[in-house]
View 1 (cartoon, rainbow, N blue to C red):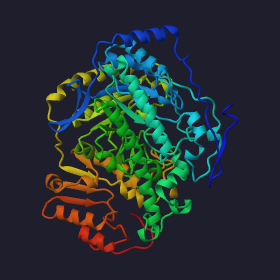
View 2: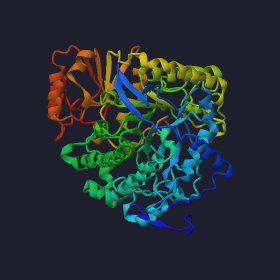
View 3: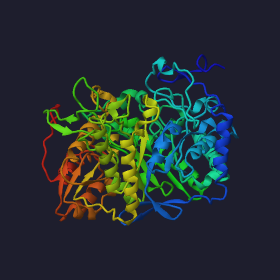
View 4: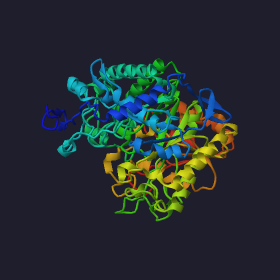
Amino acid sequence: MNRRNALKQLCTGAGVLVCAPQWLHSKELYSGLEKKQAREAIDALRNEPAAIAQVRMRNGGARLLLNGEEVYPFLGLSRQLLNTVSNYSRAGIRLIMPFLGTRSGWLGENQYDWSIIETFLGQLLHRDPGLYFLPRLHLNTPEWWIDKHPDELIEYALPIPQERYDIDNLRRTKGGHSFDLNKELREASFASIPWRRDTAKMLRHFIQYMDNSPLKSRILGYHFTTGRTAEWNSFGERYMPDISKPMRRACGNIPDLERRLNTTFGLLRDPQKEQGVIDYIRTYHQTIADTILYLAKKIRRQTMGRILTGIYYAYIAEQVHIQEGGYLAPQAILKSPDIDYLASPYAYQGNNFKGDDNMPEGMTDDAGNWLGRARGVGGDGGYRIPVESVKRHGKMFIVEIDPSTYVSKRYMRIGGPGSTTVDGTRKIFRRDLGQMFATGDGGWLYDFGPMNKSPQGWYSGEAVIEEMNRFAVLGEKRPHLDLSSCSDILVVSDSESFCVSEHWLAGKPWENYGIRHCDFFNHWFLNTQARSLHRIGAPFDTLFPFDLTAEDFRKYKLVFMSNLFYLGKQQVDKLLTMLKGSGTTVVWFYAPGFISKEKLDLEQMQRLSGFSFDMLTSPGPL
């Protein structure tokens, strides 16, 4: 059957025309010689024992132990890794993240063939026999499964333009991986129980296959993922998922589109009128988290905890489409004993100059004051995730660093100002890799070069390799260093507040801005404030409110409460008890505790802050 000309599906409530991509399993990605080289490289590992990898908290930070020895968690990746792995090898980076498309070997029910993936890993070892792998497993659903389970697919509340599905075969990488930001909309719902079950079964078979291979000595863990950008965000979030049968079973009644889009109290939701919407958003995200936790537990059980399990999750700043595509159940993920690390790209925020959505110049407030920039020379390279919370739960944070460089032939804006010169590239790498080293976090460099007319990679230039090597060597000293925080400033940001804030689509106010489709509070209270915070002249820590302790208010001299306007009475009581007599200075950004679990509560806000307020019922400047 020609997948481009057939298989149309009508989604309820939206009239969505869906035509899925063709997916063919083929072993012709490799020549006979390449397969032979790969086999020889893998066979050379036969006498090596299985790798053991663990994250352990010691001396103020998370440490990566590989076969009992601490190693610097500095990795390299690319979607065209065979083209770029030599750059990492020359820089002394031996930990590599290969992109693996599991649907390339998931051929049918109980039918698997992992030869493409095995050959890919063998080819990488053929180029550098000293490599270790942290595979990034893409769990995108195979066509045969989608055809067999039409009632388990995502449904959208908004219509989707037909051209979004006017696609040809998706091109695959050598690791059997293929994905497209706008063409993967015919996918299983994250609430689908059959999808969870069958995907877990597939993962069990894949891991067992690798454990029976000599490759087990070089695999230090699995990073499993899926979603629109393969970061566990929802497919098609701009079209308002998910009104499917599986999600209805998980969430109960799903509010209609108008109720999801509109708020009854300006930028905020009134629990007395909108509790159904608030509950839906919260349960929707908990359902996604439950799916992640289910798969993490299955992977952990299959590996017997011998190696790492990690995911993208919990970043809160610069999160587009946050009510559908964000990460609003971080506490459940952080508490899981089956997840060793969390990962996130670092800041992407561009400028907010009208008519210009490029990254270079940075952010201004509405009075025209320049607040700073995220990328490039003079930028802050800020992190988007409350890193201190990750550490407190005994997990490692791994930052994804992906600036373009002077080697780039295209897409240079992602590097920011100065990235087109050798000197500028050096400065950017020193900031990004220096921050990773100093904060005690892990990191990986993501080379988009081959996708952007730089076939040998953004990181192929000698100056870049020198900088990578400099920090790889420096990282060898970190086992002897104290990684404890020295910050006197704490920034607290709440994920749950986005269940009660105006929907990102209600106004779409940032069409011409560098980070588009953020809601009002994410844009002005987290993203933009981050630029100013990084220029405050002192280090600061970031934390989710559920991890706050009384000790924090004694340790930190200054605490910024970004968006804590959704608090229950017990939460307010706990905060007041912890704050009493602490001597710290607290800055409440807006309406602290104004929304209780039952109502809009001006009295609670006054009790928490100690200020008196009048209510302005007509809109005005903030």
